[in-house]
Length: 431
Image 1 (tube, helix red, strand yellow):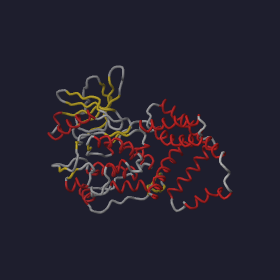
Image 2 (cartoon, helix red, strand yellow):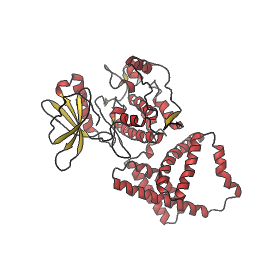
Image 3 (cartoon, one colour):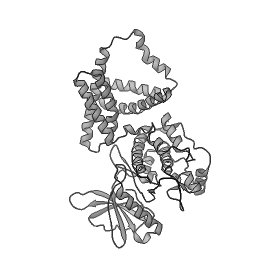
Image 4 (cartoon, one colour):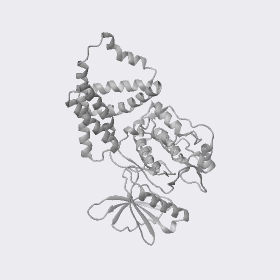
């Protein structure tokens, strides 16, 4: 859990927990790491709020946060485990996220690859879809309020719901809520709130992940206000710098950024457009649903394979892999992840074998067809996205033929992302 508040330097005494360290502090609370006493030894974050430091507004925000968190249950939202109080403090016992916050993650890496950003954005979108279905607007989305679990494939979790509230339509507020750098222009200029305010914040976060800084980063408060209130369109760079080299953004990524960073909320993407956007691709987001779809398709593939329906089995294996590969990032258990990885290797090998069987069973192509791949490469030269995808397909097939399954799997993940985008682009072009 991210920090939120000031308090005394000495850690508080919280029944049934041993305080092991301080995670951070904010305006009216201090956040500690703690271990539950007894058998479970559960590691938690405890947000300790001094009653003396609470103003009427901060007291209202805290009560609202507790009431809201009690009703929320989602894998990408920090869980409220319990809350207790004594004469001097209120203690929120929260799920502990060992990976720190997204801001720290970005600063350590300067900027994040598009494929990693997509995975984080998918998780953020799943959480926002859950909140949107309950008419909840967070109102303070920023990298500091987005926490990460530990491990090689960290999961993202939204935290700090002190400013969140139920909002069904546009409303006017007596006071500004949230952090200015990530605040929608309509809040700053007109104090006008709508559910789309969170989507502007998502756009700023997406921009910062890709380019290592927020679009309105400023030296002074006055300069920041001027940039936010400016009528000029937000400029979206076409390339990002990764490891010292320029990498073009895909058209889908640029399109989503442009749609989210519309100053006029009437022109900004709404939640339906955001959740349905091709860059996010929620259908293939690492989740329990994604894993179940992959397993279901794999079972159908095995059944078709057993029945001698080789072409159908080949099609289903390939489709199953587009769900199972992302699901690797969903599994927390190292044992289950290894089992899933073994299954993926098995299905990849079987699909490769079936491809050769299906191809052998067809009439031999005329000699002119042998040059189609080279012809395709020639035709696609003007489109860098397509060329990059075709090269990765070639590399994937080569690694697979050599039996280098680990490297092939990594390439397959990248290919899935880019091929799905190309398919969507083609479908839009012919509709």
